[in-house]
Image 1 (cartoon, rainbow, N blue to C red):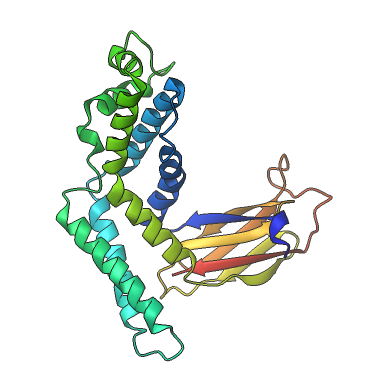
Image 2 (cartoon, helix red, strand yellow):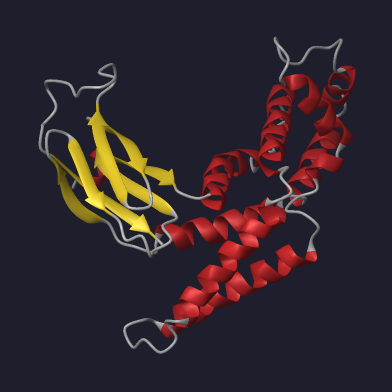
Length: 252
């Protein structure tokens, strides 16, 4: 399959991976805090609010610790497998052990909810019309601080997300690489397969042509994929190849 004409779609099947996939593009965006534009600094504050909305759950830390512990156990079971690169395996185990220790040392995954300006933005942003000068004068005041002051504040916020960033950049590549893609054919643009109920699947990955996108339904026992084209809703376009070749992976 020509990689230049394909896209990869990812469908999470548990809470931790779902959170990581939501966080990944947001974390990538806030790394670009070196701009001098107040408008972009405002948007970055809103992005931090989005991240806080995702992370502000009391159960999340425990769920991540459980997932990391499970992945450690899976890797330990491969210690005597001669087909596994033991150096790479030890590297992954060290990363997961360090991550687990860091999570256990913190009360939560991040401390953004202690930031007064983010708390204010979070309270007002969901209102019709969003933020305004009369509801959030503190934000207007912040935006008229010097560029150096705003950048310093954004760097401080970014520093508070180091654990979160490490969590995402460690777990997502590890889970994505856990299984290779396999080729399949969607007959009449539909594909269905039986899943092993004894395997804890974390992520469904679909690599397909740009001509169609997948609508994915997954349960404990079955994976179903419909391939659609924009504007067709429930039926594929007449110009779409009815026997569509694609690649997929169910990562554990």
